Image (cartoon, rainbow, N blue to C red; front, top):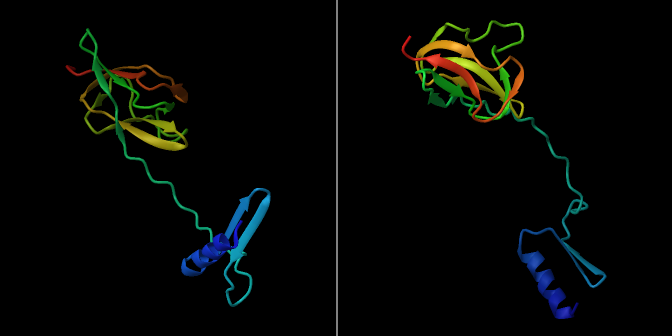
Length: 150
């Protein structure tokens, strides 16, 4: 590296917020560091680590598709694990023959360690629960059959 190039690099470091610059070229290494009062400027200081809570996911409305028999399918909006209740020992959100309304939580799908509440978009009577508790589900897989005319 030429002396003129080194001078330009030194000037760049002095006039900027850069504390240190290191360049490797052709098996040679050049390091330029600012002299800071108070010790070694090239050693990083202690960093405080603050845990950040994961954002709470918004409830996801489940896609609805109508069957030829008049029953509508409520499908999974994502890939994950299907849970009928909010906790293993808790009562399920819904049962067969139960009436549902829009906005009502039907189940939870866990995806990437986040619990996503799946809400109804339609009203009607649950005629079938198509997935067993604690089973994996795919995007678009039918979760429930609903009779909107009941």
